[in-house]
Image (cartoon, rainbow, N blue to C red; front, side, top):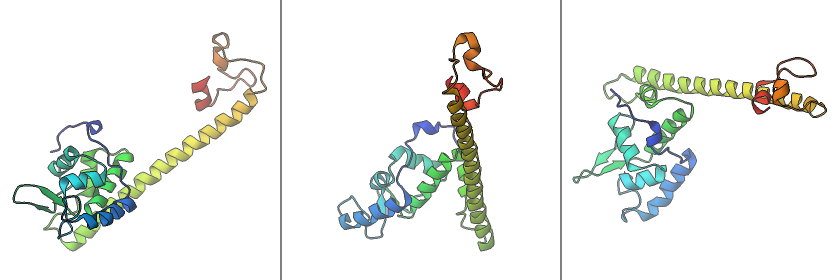
Length: 192
């Protein structure tokens, strides 16, 4: 069961997919200094948080709810992560940007069960990718609709630029339009 926690209390992950790999590669030169990957290619939690653009609290919480698991732990209990875990964090961030809550993200990304047959594993991964594609399609359709509304508002504003009426309380801020009697487009109405 996922604990109720506001996503706003967790610092979002901002590192892009391409730059995460570049940062890890650049940090390979600092291996052994405590700032880059160790001899196994694993990165200590603090360095991993820095590379991911997040904080330790977020990484530990993601581990607690099953979104991210360290690849190894040191005898002292330090968590170590694989460079590919940056990809997993990037996907969590992308899904959050699409408006999904962590519980739903966890359900979508729950593909790593060790005892799962290969066909089931592939089906789960396919389902997660298709769900993400559908969310992006929905977002794109919503944005296209918003953009069309702004186009309509801009066209109406051109008509308004030659109108002698000035939006004021006495004419209900030009609601409805004083020229054609029609309702103003939503985006224009909000600003009049």
